[in-house]
Image (cartoon, rainbow, N blue to C red; front, side, top):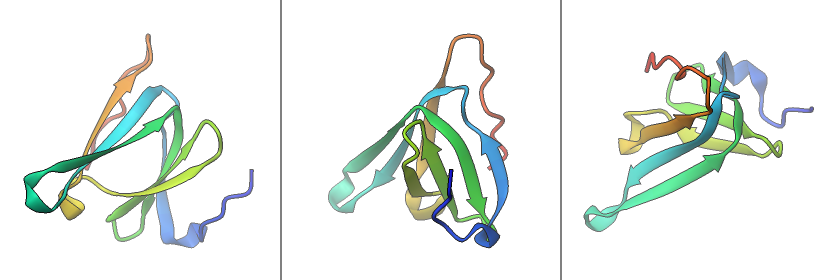
Length: 90
């Protein structure tokens, strides 16, 4: 699969294939939140500056999302049966 982003800007690769979904919760103006859901994530690439993560889903679609703590983002996910949670070293 061809990766459409400049790979030199991403240094850490994580397998996310043990996840059913990943959601990114972000605050918006007025105190509300937006929940962005990615079904069947496969792999994540963390940017060299640690602020963004490019997540490739099961359809090959790339989602560029802020890392936890940036722009108020919180990540939450569910693991598939028999999988262990992805270690969170954020």
